[in-house]
Amino acid sequence: MNQESNELIGRYVYHVGRHLPPERREDVARELVSLISDRVDDETRPGEASDAVVLRVLREMGPPSAVAARYGYERRLLIGTNSLPAFFKLAKIMPVAILALSVLSFPYSDRFTLSALATWLQNYFHSVLLNLGVLFVVFVVLEQLSRTHAKPQADFDPEKLSAPPAPFDGGKVRPAVLVAKIYATVAVLLLFNFYPNLVGVWTNAGVARFWVIPLSAVGVHVPLWLFNVWLAGNILLKTEVLRQGTWTRESRWAQVGLAMLGLVVFLAALWSSHLGQLDTDFLASVGLSASDPQVAALSQASRALVLAAGPLVLLILWGIAKDVWRLLSAPGTAA
Image (cartoon, rainbow, N blue to C red):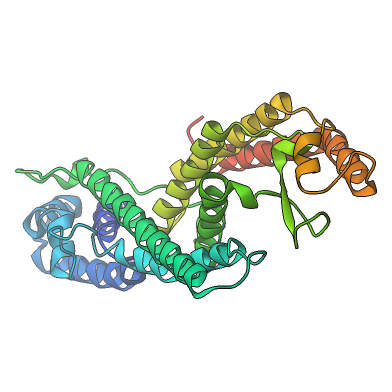
């Protein structure tokens, strides 16, 4: 077979694999390539072009989604079988991540009662069910979006299949690392939106056993809506990459865009903050006075953020520039 025939087969096999779970794609791809090649060899008549035979064989096999169905893929599921492994990985770790956050929110400073423990357990299980529901909805939405890009074809034409993305360094997915990053991001999202009383500077000074001094009390203000957009974007991107089983050029560009948005969030937080200006009323409510050495240390630490901002911005820009250069110089990138 010539190069054009091999490319047609490669495109067809790639699109079949997109409908299969990541762990099955390699085995199915080898089997399909062998099956198609054998059929082409058997059906090629003397003097007939191999690419014409390949097209005829692929048309007879049908659309990639139909072939994937023969290997166990079912479109009738709300979450397709190609997404189920990623869904179950996240669903197994989610209760543990929420438990870690719930332990921090337990009322240690209050007198222990069975009623307090029951309330804590109720809130924990409520959070687990709520977040599992959100996770399910996210995967259903991703599945529906993927279906919109795979419209049924009455007259299947293999020549119209898009080419697979060109391989480039950094395309391989490490599921454990990706899952850890997703849940770290989810934890931050939950903390800032549902447990804001836990976000800040922890101290054992003052009248309580321990206390959390909120970021606003030390002059730090985070634009929450913009921060949430950035966090949600990271969660959706990494979840989709986990579902697909690989990084593509498009997902890497999306990662660059999110890095730039993260820089905007950081600069917006820096601009809206009043570093070094402490909320003396709040500090007094927890038994800390303006003359307390710990308060002075907090003020100096918040001012030090300004000094660290410059190098941090340069570090973020350097990382973005490296990613952009890597993508532009990767094979198959359009000039």
